[in-house]
Image 1 (spheres, rainbow, N blue to C red):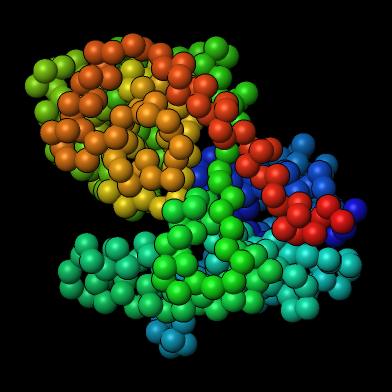
Image 2 (cartoon, rainbow, N blue to C red):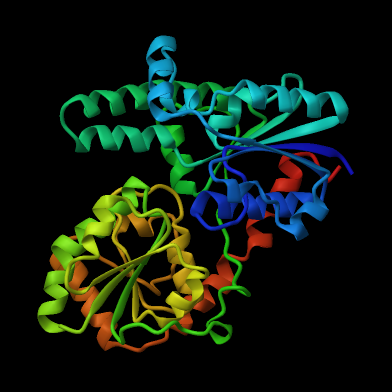
Length: 387
């Protein structure tokens, strides 16, 4: 077996948010095909604890606590002319850790998860760059949606980060994106090189409604799940609570909007004071909430790539209503409802509340289309592990 260096901007465990779910499954997949040496940052002390089963399969693991503040990263970005996305993860300790691994092991290839880690990729070793999403496009859209100084900040980030992404892709053996739509967006923006879509999957055995006990909640629970300090998620639940829920509750007064996810910011916590809205914060297992939900919603206005929250709800055979942005890139086969304007979104939610409780066709679509092993099968050839 070959030795592989795996760089990640967040430790891929526990797999409790979108980016970590993808990196965890990719890391697990590669660990069966190579001697994998993981070097990753950790934002939270809990993320420094390697899951025992995964630890057995890793050749080595180095976790660096990320302690740099956003203001400091911002000042470094202005002084250096670099994107904030990169200065936030610039750390001498990670450079030293990677150098140690390279010195101690015959690394044959490097897998870089997220653009923030590209500066740490060692020279002279083939690099597969997993961008996941086109982050620069996200900042460009944010720049269009805000006014004042933040519009300049986001526009600057989009410009500098876009140039960096294109430079990295031009030198990588392959550059991966989570969907063909993201890959096409990158190409349209001038991205060159070997651009490949490697989609997310879902652990359908874990997200099996037959094995998950529902939590006790309202009979007409409308569920949103996600990391609740992530701006697109915050804007999504705020939009739903402000513009959609009042329409739904006019005809379904017992309906309750439940927001499940860790680290809710103040704007989300305040929503919990409203009639018909519940904010749970961190929960031990989101599957019990999915099992109890009458309908799951993904009302994201800004979304990139494939939304794990949608795949998880589909795997649990829940009715799903999503915006076009949240549904883009998912081959759902018409098994979920897609709506945009508040009135249309509310009508789709009400129809789901009135319809069947279970949507086995959604789970069947996930089983047929989004098995992790099938989604990740191209990686062995891309990294030269099949030779």
